Amino acid sequence: MSDYRERLWPSPWIFLSTALVIPASILVLAPINLTVGFITAGVLYAAIVVALLMTTPLIEVRNGMLQAGSARVPLTATGLATPAEGEEARRQRGVELDARAWLLIRGWVHGLVRVPIDDPADPVPYWVVSSRHPGRMAEAINSSRRS
Image (cartoon, rainbow, N blue to C red; front, side, top):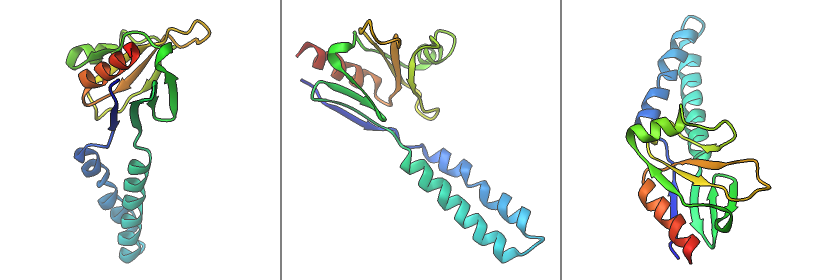
């Protein structure tokens, strides 16, 4: 049995790009009060950083379960997980995506794993889960299914 754990932390460029709220807040509030503009900018940026960190999902393969964010599925109800990167991952997230699929996708994570759901009572055909290490994640799911 192989365990896997990954947290989909935002990339540094996400924090840099959201820092644009700082000059925007100052620019909007400077005509009213420059001090209020700086305080508002700091509070808004801090709120964005906290929100990004608090909403970072955890992916875990452990004890016969796949957990992705708040969703869980027993590995006995899954099929063969397949990793995808690059162009293949882009197609899986786009033109080849089934509208019924369950998604845990983060735009700053380029790889993904597709996990078929083999439960006839479940209307979801498969999960698509972002991963920075899709090969390792798929291997952990597949080896845990065999155990």
